[in-house]
Image (cartoon, rainbow, N blue to C red; front, side, top):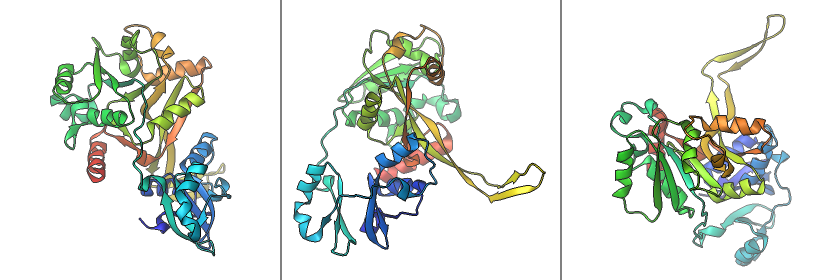
Length: 348
């Protein structure tokens, strides 16, 4: 990558900034005007804007930090010390006329310490996977391979890399195949199974964990990968004192037709050719307090979104953690599964 990959004009939109952050796979961009540094914008700035219900078509200059930290070329030798002092991960190095000549990244020269997210992870692995038929006629959905290992192992490995080592799988359909796979797999984490005798939905299976999980835990569907800092999501959940925090992903949908808006008099008011709409959608990953498990009715089928709705109506605090579209991989449908396979093979 070169310096220009991290630069964005202040007239660009927040949506464009999100796309660029995905492309460079870093947490910060530098805002320039006439090629000179004027501001910085981070993934945290964008997340806070989204949570305030800010419009994604707003210009970057609305939320950027116009007092960015930087050093001049002659000071570059003290970059690491400066970054440590100010707790920043990326530092632009400027020429005397304020042009960015390079960017120093904290982790380019140091190994990032292993995360220590010691929380239980519950994976809903009991579904029939009807959208992935005929694959699921042979294999349970969690064992469908993406590359050389099954999807559920990809999920577990990502949590394990953040420090999680205690996993609970709610199993039903072809459960013995799932158990046999992990019994034969060399691993440095624990996997426990809870058998559904009948389908209990994406939430009801949690009732099987009464007395087994008494702390904040992570809940995940078995057909998604979230490529984000799980520790940051967990810390946000605790800081906000949420009962449940739902991880939501940006999703852009292009309408393949010209869209017409009609006025009250029956005339054409506006025409938009193949517009692209943006939404935040539920990824199927949550941070959850143990109260949810304790208060579930035994043996009753219920979806987790229905559980959320119940507590929301009761006045409990339900939070959202927004992530970008490229941070979410879904394998719930055949075309999405192939996209996940391509992404993982490319990144791996």
